[in-house]
Picture (cartoon, helix red, strand yellow):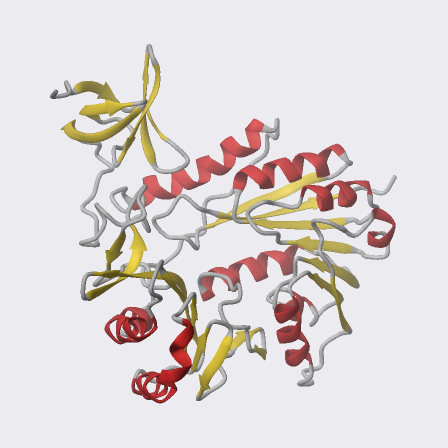
Length: 414
């Protein structure tokens, strides 16, 4: 039975990048459509499975990438730059308003194409071939990417060679996952879920890694080869991140986030850096203040410890392994600090924010890649007596719905 195309007018662009048409039966989501467009759509369950543009938005542009229609890595590559940045800013505004927060939100600090230094890719078998890339939109199928306008050229140039490594490491069942990080001394590549018999192919794998000029190759948690230390600069210190460990997606965004944090901790002499990771912000703040870094991931703290063993004239830096979700720093502990910086995962830091709100800390800087959980945590801080002084979105996830934010808050003395 042939479905009838439904005429729709797209009124807004949703926070996930789908066009939204408001109808008598409720909202209909049209992936790929833009606000202001008239479309004819085949609709199923409140979502368009396909559509034809009747009237295009003036903000519609030609996508850069040949894989855009299928690849789930980018959702808004077809949106003109000014409208794209405004959409990202608006997603922050709306998230804040959902929690009753009315405040000025700065323009989005943009991200440049071909600047993303970290990628998590997936490889699968397709007959005798290996596909390497990202999952298709709303699918478990993998797009075999030949190009990527987001990734650093140092990564895309090595895709054919990385596919060769994947072919040698594919498990009998399931997907192979690899994290690629472009460091100051070459690519750091870490495979997960590789064939358990990879150890019988050490010589071949090592030779391939050498030919690709990888800095480090790690398989299922075991470092097979390290030709050079794949370090990253954190201020004037070098940090060796753990294989597949978390880092900021682009170097430029990391520098911007760090600059905003330094500007907003005031003249603090003692700073608590919560969810500190490998010391991305702690090592920079330590030039002006003593820092206590708290992180639940042991390999990340080991990387910070190793970096601190090289003297660089920093203030005192201490660190603590602690699961801040289960055991947040209590208000009484935080009262010893002049400023708190927290940068949690996407789930946010609800329990920790409750304790910060109860504390006497004067300056707080919240960093988040999820406006929804950020707004929830900010509400707790505001209810605890804090006032927002600035909200700055930073776009380090180009063409995706995600946006980083740095929010500065202060609490007046009682």
